[in-house]
Length: 316
Image (cartoon, rainbow, N blue to C red; front, side, top):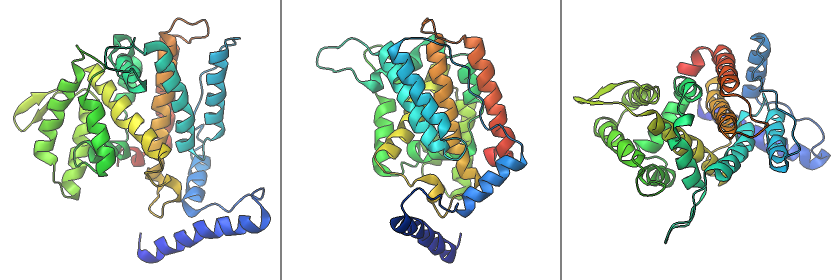
């Protein structure tokens, strides 16, 4: 996008708020060009966009609190999958804490990250649902991970990603060493890339997340299912959540660089968080829990809906 277009969109963002300063915010604002393009695409493709799992009835207070945030997420669709992700993340975080938070250790206070790491190491979480998610990571998300993990940008966020993935939840956690070995190999080949090399590096990460056995500069390496889930949970989802929560990243659809491809990343974040919430419930033995088979069928359906909607933009 040229400087004139960027300048025009900056004015549009300001003008929207200026108009509301006179009338109040009840009047619906005009859509930005990318929002119009996206709405037209959803209509033209006849997309259902997302199909939720039917929830069970229960009087459990914690469950109903979580359902309220799922409803909040669905209310944001299809227009704002980024906000839908924010809402579902709250449910995933609370589910992980309630199910996996370890007992306090000497000189170490357990936290949400410990719970997420233990969740990723649970062998029940490595199966058809997570394999479907990891086999369908969009290019935009792989590029996002490549910047944080390999080229270390932006610096502060990248430093936190490395810290999370390089530390375990306690003694005996083998995943940090496995992930560090893989990251070091990739960095050795792609640490200072030009644009084309960065694309190839992001594609390599996609193959690694899908579980392929890779040859990186003569070394054969494949990430185990728990390591791949750890990267998804703690390297991608948690990082995106933090950047949004702390206002470190541009709200995606108000950017002058936004395109249809921009939607694929937050859409995937939402899909992954939603599927992992229900998979954790499925293994929690609560009376309201869905079956793992139902979670897998729903995940496969929604990945198909997404890939059909975005077509080449998902993998371009």
